[in-house]
Image (cartoon, rainbow, N blue to C red; front, top):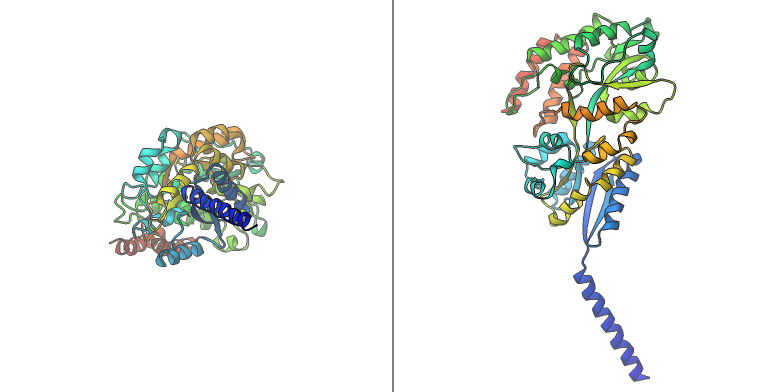
Length: 420
């Protein structure tokens, strides 16, 4: 009996030792992926992570959702980085990229992109748009652009032809204003408006780009927000409300949002991002379409996958990020309506019928083509602070308390001080 027990003990130890060697040889690297996302987005994100984990035995991704919005997420990231325990991979809004890159908190991915990615498979324009000082610190998750939603029922009732889907020969700003006039009707609480005049610089910018203007010089060191073209845009928005009466006032927009007004048939046209479509699709009793922004240019918002400089597992983290933009992951994004236009061109083109429902094919193709006519905002490390200043003055324009010239001259002066 003693010999049997000794044999069993030796066998158990031998198996245990073999197991320990096996685990050492096949050690799994755990990658912490932190993101901010709504609960309705999580099945898609989890699907991408699960697909990666199923295909890899040496790397395992642990997904953590942070409740709340971007402000809470950025605060959490800042705290984790300061504590020396950042996640390995994260989702980063484009507006925050320069802020984190300027502090050396994001890994430089430029060489990895050049070595490992065949750019012919992707919308290269999107990669160019997100460069910071010529370097790539993030990989695009997807591409959102801004377009013009319009109520086809209201156009039909007024006998107005739908706008062209051709970005190179679409409606002019003057034509757009005339159409907005024709689509305005009624009085008081029952009044229907042609357009929602947006004074937020990040929402006004597609019109600005169509006028060949921008908010900063190319080196991001001087404000150009009081450029004559930009002043003319804000003058026009002010006139649409207070002189022409074809756009609701800020007070009216407080009682019913622009999206709600559009869905209720109270607003004929709404300039906004493709991210609005899930909300627009919740109502069935109206028929809407999408068209290029008047002027034929638009802007983009490109959230990115980033690898944090403080991660000790950058090599494995890069394998994760690469896989998140392959065709398998991008198809999961489309299946779950995540990310806007897929960064992978093959997926975008192959799945066009599944994108942007319920729009017809010509409007879906217009959405894809918008990428080539889009440009990123001139984000800086202190972009949020700059916009806080600008919004004070654009709000005064929207309330008709300052002229566009006076307000934007004051904004430019303050911005120049902050950009030094």
